[in-house]
Image (cartoon, rainbow, N blue to C red; front, side, top):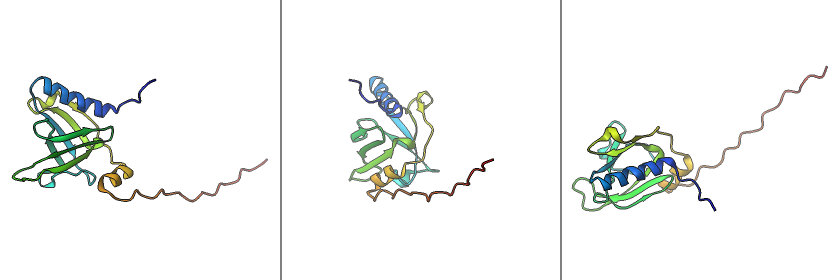
Length: 140
């Protein structure tokens, strides 16, 4: 029985983290932030944030085909923050020490259903367009 294919983006991000662990490097991700990202917005610059996703920097990291989630503390905060990043918003994953050697991705808009799930909102209603009239064909 074959297993379903894992998202290539998730697999590459996971591979960068594994590579960094094997070589004692720190894995960073670059995120193009949108309203579906739950990140500390005070650290967002020009719509981007760079996050350290090393096991020593985060707690409870989970990587699915759609999301990267973990807890981390930022700045002087004593309480950890729950960070949620849709994978489609990650534009780069690489070792902090050699960022040019990482994996880069095209950013895509966050699907409305995923956005609603992250933000705890109702999923958007399906919009059904009214049927368009068809012009009859001429018979000769």
